[in-house]
Image (cartoon, one colour):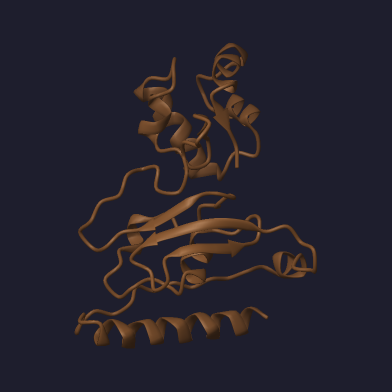
Length: 189
């Protein structure tokens, strides 16, 4: 199953490269994008399985709403939108970040900058998603300065996404009191 997905991804990238030349990007090659699903996520696809909807915008073949499986990554969202254009800057995105229902993924053009909230660090209800927030997003929280924001961000980079808000207790400098103060402003997707 994985081999088929790799072949399909390669075919999409080849088509994207040809289309990039055709659309006026003569020497541009599409950025590499390999998607690998593990067997457990493939086995989870059954009739009636829940799905999520993500808005993919920017430098992709078919911007708009895409339907994904819970737990899918930014790379899956980009692929579901037809893949990145040849002049897209995929290095500006964390392709391994998990997307959630209602998130937006914006793929920038080379040289274009996008904000740190490109795929939903701050939700409509004002809560900050601990697994998508940049250090700057975290610093904007009441009681979090630049040093603590950087510790939280670095902890996530080194140890992977937080499973619960309570996992913040593993970050040096966060105790029960600080966790209590932050709990109402945070969410984990």
